[in-house]
Amino acid sequence: MGFTVRDIRRAMDVYTRDNVYLGTVLEVIPGPAAPDGEPELSPDVLQSSAVSGELLGPMPTQPLGNRGPANQSARARYAIGQASAKPIGRGAIRVGKFGGLVGRREISLDAVQTVSLERVILRLRSDEL
Image (cartoon, rainbow, N blue to C red; front, side, top):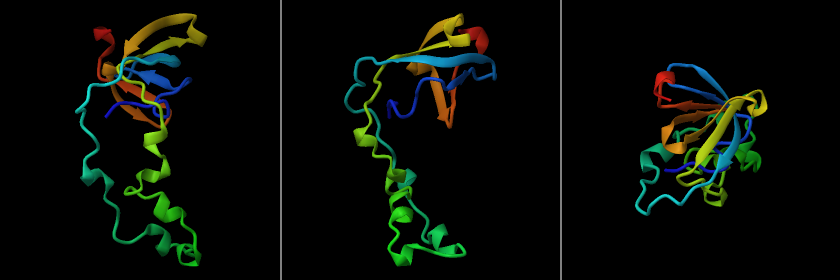
């Protein structure tokens, strides 16, 4: 599964596998589309709990017509609409510190291991760059 413009954005912090800070994402450079047959999400990833946590809360609103809990489940892909997000393909990210004045470099998306919250973590150590 490739990354989309919603996954990696400007101003996200970039770290190596050994936790060395490289800077922030200055630019996302789209590349050619990933080849057909790239693996999709496993159906196991999209399973939801049998009981909604919202129903266990102090004032459940789902029985009153609130569709939010159902729309934001794993099965509904957390209501993000991945199909509508533009894929980055086999592109790269431009990274640097202080607005790109220091340590500016271009890193292939193949080197990205994890994207979490506002952080991009590479599968490479700092000595491998």
